[in-house]
Length: 121
Image 1 (spheres, rainbow, N blue to C red):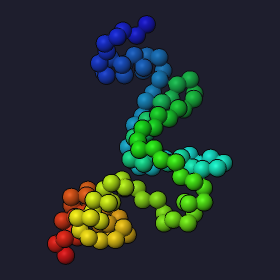
Image 2: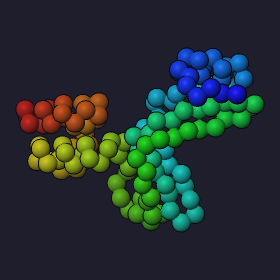
Image 3: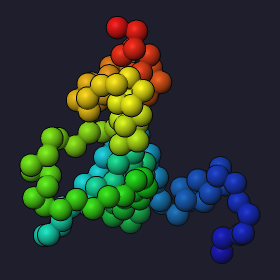
Image 4: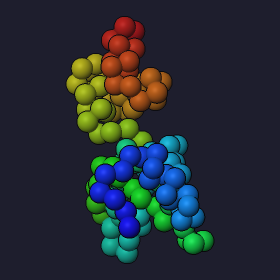
């Protein structure tokens, strides 16, 4: 029986007693599920791996988007950065999408720093 109000420390202890391990996968940025007709992309992903009874289960949270099969092959590679951040950098600094992505990469994904770097050049 699981009580209604339990803090995270108690929950982790109870999960450990039941042999359940939970691991945050903080280095994952994008998850893509490949389907027959289209792909399903989750950007800005927060992934947790839960291991119980020898089985690994993944919990994925983030921005969901359906991508038709043909469109991904014709487009540029999928950017690991949020589309809103890219658009913000493009508008504020007056640069192309490619330059905005490069600036976000140089600024470790921080839009404000990317804009400052582009406008101070």
